Image (cartoon, rainbow, N blue to C red; front, side, top):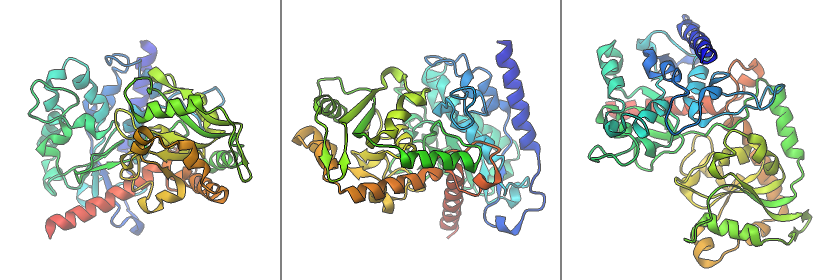
Length: 439
């Protein structure tokens, strides 16, 4: 316990010192339209939530994943790029990275956008599983009361339209109707009228609310400089792909027809080694069983097989999106989607919809589940040259879907990563929204 407290205090002091620094007293002209003010919130809305990292119900001890400002512990002692990253820590990771942005301003009146460093996903845990589960409709009201009571002019100037925050869970977990009594699942943060104007960056957005935007799940790869990134991309390009397709995940064991069940059956029955043109695979399908969360903090378990597979299957589960989508892109394994909500209609900033056919394959899950379409047949019909181009496109996309390490080298900072793209997209959305409101 003493070790945890000491670590938390060091983390708190580190982030607080960054937050109090004033790197933009003289804001350069290049920041026109891109100035961001980071709202100072009491610790109970962010870092204070980390102090109870070992006490969240129904979860493993989260304390080990606070290391390296939320990247987690290295996968091995000498690793500088690979970490045991927990997706729930993205709020901390994003907060740390925002404090490094070149266009921060201490003056909210000069800001084009206001960042709220509120760890909504962590705060939601007490409403999802803990003592406040029957008060989930109140999630966010304490934050709103603070914003209106302290420097209310910051909020009132644009009625919250210029504010944004990161929520490290799918939007569905914050979308319980206020009328549900008793609560069923989730909190009602995104259903509160008080926050209708705020841009929410989530792992998975719903189709209709304008203020939600999906951003990539964090992988375990966080390089500190260009050398590590380029070395990894070279390894991905050179990797020999001996499996036609791979599925890393759980489920598919029920008797009810569904896409995961169909995939497992096809993987278990596909024993022949397929050949096509110059391609030769020693196996049709590789399966990495990730049931019960055994893969979540162990990237070695699934990254090595992904490096050896040509295609990675990305079926939906409880919700359409998966962290595995970004793991497969990182490994140069061409993703295969079975519905648009899994990625095409989600990550438009990071995975442009008009480029989707250049780096992925789409197969109707209904055709597979109910009409007997074999996935292997679809994939083997793709010409060798197109597969090569698709993989090269995937490799080119690695920098934009990864979260580089904080304090990265200037060379790596010159390449836009997931945080940079999310911030740029948010600024454009806020600008468009403000123009629409004022019209």
